[in-house]
Each structure stands twice: as C-alpha cells, then as structure tokens.
Amino acid sequence: MIEVMAALVLASSLEPQPRVRVEVPEIEIPEIDIEIPELPALLAEADEDHGDKDADNDDEEEHDEKGVHVYKMKPQHFHFPRIHVGGDEDSFDEGEATAKVKGRGSATLPVKGAVTFQLQAQGGDVEVATAPGSQVRVSLEKDADEEVSLYASGDRVRASIRGRRMFRHGKMRVELPVGSRLELTEMSGDVTAQHLAEARVRSMSGDVKLVGVDKADVTTISGDVRIDDARGQVRLHTVSGHAVIASAGGAPQVEFRSTSGDMDWSGACGKDCHLSAETMSGEVRLALDPKSSFELSYTSHSGELRDGINLTVKRSPKSRRGFSSGSLDGTFGKGEGVIEADAFSGNLILKKK
Image (cartoon, rainbow, N blue to C red; front, side):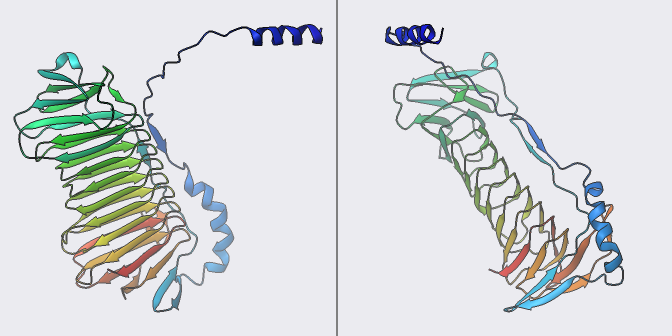
C-alpha cells in the first residue's frame, strides 16, 4: 500500500502543474485594546507579603549615585494604561465625491484651501508635506504606470491606487496646501509628514516621523515614533515602540501611554505645560530646559525616580486615584507647569537639556 501511494505521488510530481495566480487579499488593521484587568487583586498577595515589614517605614528608599539622587518606589498597586489601536478615520465613499481626477503615476486635484487627506496603506512608505498653492498632488516614486485617483468630498480628499483604497507597496509622495491635516492608517510601511496643522496616524509596525506639526495623534503597536519641533498637543500611544519627542515653546501638551515602549522627551516645561506619561515597563526620560518651572508627581509599583536636576522633593499621600501607591511629589522652579508620570516597573529619569 505504501509503495502504491509513493508511486502515485511520484507520478503526479512529474506531470506539469498549472500556474496559479494568487491574489493578495485586502488587509484591515484590527482594533486592539490592551489592558491588564483586575490589577489590584493580582498585586494584593504581593502587597500582603510586604505589609508587616513595611508598616513602620513608609518612606521611599533614597541614595545618591554620581550626582543623581535616586528614589526607589515600594511595591504597591498600579493602574495599567489602556492602549487602543484601530483605523477610526472619518471616511467617505467615492460615490459621494464632488470632484475627482485620475492619472498614471501621479494625479493633481485643485482644491479651495486646506484639506483633510485620508489614506490607508498596507506596506508602502508615505511622505507628506505642504506646498504653496491650492492643490493636492499624489505621485508614486517608481510605479509610473499605476493608476492614481483622487476623490474630494467637501474639504476631505482620499487617494486610491489601481482602484483600491489600500496603498500596498512602493513609495508615495503627497503634497497638500498649507494648513492641511492628515489621517493615515498604515500597517508596515514608514510614514513621514512635516509642517501640517494636524497629523493622525495609526500604525502597526511602521515607523512614524513628524516634523513641525501643530497637533499630533499617533498610535502604534511596535513602530518607533519621532516627533521634532512639536508645536502643540501631542498624543502618543504605543505598545512596544520607542518614542522621541522634542517640543517647541514652554507650554507643551503631551500625553504618552505605553506597555513596554520608552519615551525620550526634551523641551521646556513652564506655565500651562502639561506632560503625562503612563507605562508598564517602559522608561520615561525627560531632558528639561533649565528655565523650566513645574510641579512633578511620580507614582510607581517598583520603579525609580532618578533626579539629575535637583528637585525639591516632598512626600505624597499614600492614596492616589483609588489605589495605595509608592509615590512622591516634587517642584522645580516656581512650579508653574505640571508633569505626571505613572509607571509599573519603568523608571523616570530627569536630566538637564
């Protein structure tokens, strides 16, 4: 029986096989929520083990390390941040378009002014910039024969390649009128955008780089994010990606959440400044302009605050946000701005810019 089966397999392998064309399916970025539920219950047993020996000693451990004052938090309860990744752009159907153009390798659509440009990308790299004039131009770097279409509905413009909403491969360059906004969902390609009024990017594994954007809203799973010359509000959520943010001005508004990703932020934090960082195991590193002035609160289950700027530190209440916590408060300068950092096991590092 075995010999017969072997002969049949051999015979079939010698026959010419027909060529099969495999069509790559459309892939949508899923909506993902990551949160550790019931954390207080999970940590209750660990806290009981520390309860008796810590009852008479509520202060955090402190020591100096080469000019850096280190505050070690005690194991306590901690609220894990929630990360949401999903394509939630306000899209429209091409049938609703009030204007449209098509071209080979590129397309240019006249508009009345600033627009909201929408794009879904699977693996291609996308570069977006503003340019003088009142037009939207999309061009493909290598695929000159590909059909490019642009559809407009009100102040929204969408691009499609070969009749598909998903840009799959290669490199695309987009030029928008000054003051325009970007809404982009990307799977694995890289995104670069500069000098926009607003950029909202959802990415799985691609890297994101923004320069001179007035408002940034970025969510990634594993892609790294770099935001230079951030001029306004920054909202950056990541699972494991590394974030680098350089803020302009003395009143930045930054919200950072991560599971294991680190954040490096640099800038001045003064009046009306608000920096908020929540992470499980990621490290938060802040390079602060000496002219900064802020109040700082740090809460952690087992992380460290490494103070290289000489904060004026005071103890915090034992209860914050409904949980007991290892925490401390500090002030730098006149205390005009606010910095809040919550970490499970990640450290908060402060240094001079």
